[in-house]
Structures are given as structure tokens and as C-alpha cells.
Length: 468
Image (cartoon, rainbow, N blue to C red; front, side, top):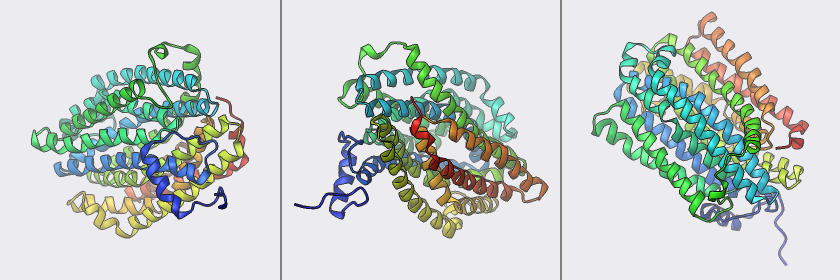
């Protein structure tokens, strides 16, 4: 007889099988699967899912950068406003993933399906309300963010389309969270491959081929994401899977909505804190001109390119936390998180070293304007210094959220972002005359503090007792 596979080893002979199986999206019981295998089964498609989002972000700014620094600034300012929408979508997605994962861990697939429908209905209602605000007040929001007349002239329609069409990004986030909570990470990956491939193909065609400029980028984004949502809904309602939605589930259930809202509202607030801090940073940077803002936008897109796949790995830990807490296995849930931390620190540490060493040639790919390049290079290598801390911190945050403990990371975000990062960035940039570099330094230090605080709180284990 061969020796059993331990929780701490993964033979090379089985690694290829894990990778291939993760792509196929085979149904598995993640409450009994060997932990290293379970993390990889979930992480491989989740990392690739987030990698597709990263490629989209880079491709978008790559094409738009050919239109000049004002066009890049339009994207940067609008994305800063969109962070509020992302905060709402991700907060509701946290609740959806946590509740669905817990029900799946309890072997209650019918209740998981009911919860999934309520997440979609709540997200649809919220997205339509935010969309109306974007359609009527998009240019005013750009002006409020510090856009000058040139930026407003080319960016007003872009902002209206992006904010007004937020229902596509909201639903694609929420439905993918439902799939991840159920352990069907491969389908979430395929959804973003479809949506972002369409966007990458349509982007240059509309921006340059039809001469729509930056507006074409917004149209391509919403078409791609909209097709992704239709694909998700088809799979949920027509194809067999762990979560199968039927007509009987499409009813408004106040008790389920309240449970989602209770967990999701804190998650929304948590993300609003983190994402509005980016708005504060952009507002500080806008005082130094469009070159500083464009350089920062390029650097942040590159950072997102690295960090989004790492979020995929941390999401694998979150799914395992939810399902194993549902199965009454809290110690196994904790072990899964530490495995995810180990993989993530290695991954982002390597990427961070690469960015630090090659920041200048990398950023030259996105701009030929010397001043923009200088700011982009500086931002990239300064922020990359904190990548190992970001890796650990995002795993801690995902673990808390996967357990339904959204208040803990919310409190940590308040302390690290609102009470520290923004005032510190302003002091360095203005009082100590560091300019944009002061903002970049504040980002690195704030996220490192968040990671250290998260590790301390995680070890206390209070998240293991949260009920959802």
C-alpha cells in the first residue's frame, strides 16, 4: 500500500492532475479534500480569473494611453469614482460568497440557491440606482474630483457610460461570487475570460477603428461585461451544477435579503473605506497636474495586474473558510488560510522584486511622455516594496470575510486608511514637500500596517465563532 497523502505535502505526480482538474471544474467536497490540493483546486482558476481582469486593466490603459495624458487622466478619475461602485458590488459579493459557502458546507444546496437569487436581486436594485446617478451627474462628479476643462471635454461621455452601465460589473462580480462560494471557481474563470476577451478585442476597434476615442473604451468594457453576465445567467438556470437556480427561487424573501444585507452592508462599508481612500489619494495627486495623475494611473494598473491574481489565491482561502466552518471544522479552516498565505507571499514577493528591478522599462511600454514616465516609475517601485505584506494582508482580509466576520477588516481599514494613510500622504506631499512621492510612500506603509494588524487579530480566532 502506498502512503497516504498528508495535509502538508503534494507529490509532483499529482500536481499536473490538480491543475487539469481545476480547469475542468469538477465538483468536489472541499470539507474533506486534502488541504494543499483543495487550495490549488480553487486557486488555479481563481488566479486565472483575476489574471484576466488584470489583463483587461492593462490593455485598457495601454490603448487609452495612445490618446495622451488627458485621456489616461479621464480613466484614472472615473475609475476613482467607480471604486465606490466596486465597494458596493464587492461588499455584496462578500456576503453572497460567505452565505453560499456556508450553506454548501452544511449540505443545503436548496438554501444556497435561494440565497444566490436574493444576492442578484439586491445587486440589481442597487446598481440601477447608482446608474441613474452616473447618467445625470457623471461630468459633475469628474469636476468634483479635480478634472480640468480639457479632461471634462473628452471624458464626460466616458464617465456617463461607465457609471451608468455599472449594472454589468455589479452583476458579474455578484454572480461570480456565488460560483466561488459554491466551489465552482472554474466557471467564474471562464466568465471573465469571455468578458475580458471581448473587451480587449473591441477596445482598439472602437477607440481607433471607429474613432470614438476614450468613449470607445467605455462602450467595449460594458459590452464585454454584459455578455459575461448573460453567460453566467444561462449557466445558473440552464446547466447542471452545485448551484442550480429554478423559477421557484425568483421570489423576494425579506429574511434572506436581511441576512445578506446585514453581512453585506458591513462589507460595503469596509470596501468604501478602502476605496474612498484611493479617491482621497487621487484628490491629493490631482493638485500636481495631469502628468502626476497619469503616471499614478499607469502604475496602479500595473500593481492591479499583479495583485488581482493574488486576490484569486486569497479567495480560495475564503471559500475554504466558509465551507469548513459550515462543516464545523474551524481548525481546518485556519490551516487553509496559512497555506494560502504561504503561496501568496511567494507569488507577490517574486512579482514585487521584478517590478522594483524593471520599473523604468516596464512603464515605458505605457507612455512616451518623460514626465509621466518619471512619476509612473517612481510609483511602481515604491508601491512594489510592500508586496509581501499585501500578500499576507489580503489573505487575512479574505479569511475574515469568508467567515462572515466583515466587521474586523472594517475596523482595520478605518485605522489604516482613513486615520493613517490619507493624513500621512497629505503631510508627506504638502507639509514635507515630497509631492507625489509622498502619496506613493504612504500607500506602501499603510498596507504594510494593515497586514501586520490583520495577522495579530487573525491569530486570536474570534472569526471562527461568527454565525451567518
